[in-house]
Amino acid sequence: MATEYRYRTAITRLDVSEEQQPLLEATIAEWKRGCQIATDLAWNHCHEKRAVQSCAYETVRAETNLGSQHAVLATHHAADAISGCVEREANGKTTSKPQFTAPTIPYDQRSMTLFDDGTVSLATVESRVRCPLVLPEDDDGYQWQYLRDDTWEMTESTLTVENGTYLLHIGFRQPKTDTEREDAAEDGTVLGVDLGVENIAVTSTARFFPGGSVTHRLRSFENTRRSLQQTGTRSAHRTIQEASGRQKRYLRDVVHCIANGILTEALKYGCDTIVFEDLDHIRTRTDGTWGHVWAFRTLIEFVGYKAESEGISVETVSASSTSKQCAECGHTDDRNRPTRDHFACQSCGAEANADYNAAKNIGLRYVRRGQQSSRRTGDGQLALASGTVTPNGEFIPYPDGFEAESTDKSSSTKTVV
Image (cartoon, rainbow, N blue to C red; front, side, top):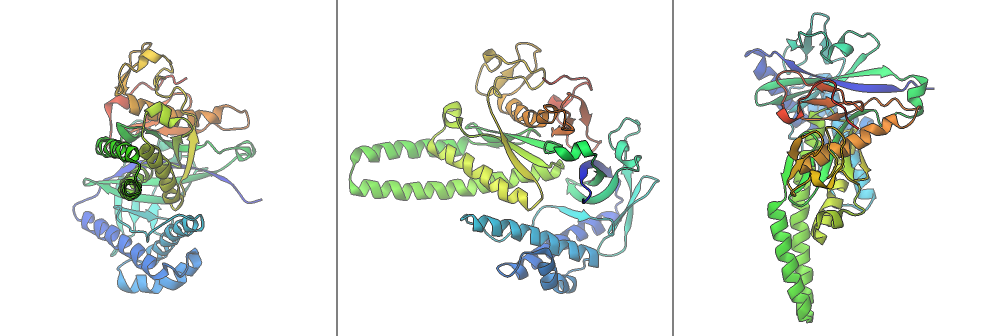
């Protein structure tokens, strides 16, 4: 039987010198160009990794400054993106050729070497660069458990650049035990997403996608449609159909942008799973229009096919009481949400944006599934803006240099029910 692994990501800032920065930035730019060249060549022709590599590798090598291994990885990345589009089309959905714009680049064991002295060697478009990892001085820093334990093997990692900060998402894997192999579906890092009207989507990492302009446009359309329906003429019916088509095209563009943003959050925080609330009663809960409900369903669908090409799964959980339950202490009370926007726990006093609190609850509900059976490891963790939370409520901060948000910071003994 093939070995099964559990995967983890250790996010670590790199100390990059002024001389090294141009090399890394040029390498990322060439990586994106290589992925696009491979996609352009293989689009409508092939999508299997071996086939795309055969079709595009030589051209990528000739037209970019990428080394041989990154050229191979670029063809594989393009193949994954095209495969996601092929599956979507097979399900009767529309799609378009992938475009590569994210300031990231993958590294595998051939293009990256991790040294015992806390430095890492990275291949670039010219010579390799060797950069120190900015690791916690405290031995309790979560990165150490992977770096010092020989049972964790380094696998594909990702370098990303944000506002001049270089972050290396170092991938590790460890063989699963027999118990873990039975059911480890809830292991990994989870991004929770709440859906609503004021904010179309809010992630557990505190990224907000406002819905004000969408709501205003949909309300206006609803009023116009009601007025035309009362007219009852054939011309009015045609006008409703035309207006409905315009609204759906507008919403589709908005939803595409939000889906890309959610996927960016998942990649940034090394998430294995994106979790939404199920939509069974969302119109009643949000008092949304038909357009909102259509947008929510389309958003989950778009995120699903985009995430698949990155190896990220999309799941749903029941949204029951997620808007009334405190993500800090677990207390549920109708009075916890005095207004649409504000959450104030009547038990522990925690305050937060109501949609953000709900996003954390949605993610935690999925993470806690791992504790509901003795067969499961319960080793999942929820991604927040400044760290992760385990099923037992342990808070693990991200390294210095990573985006932080004060509302997520807490003691390491925080209890989540």
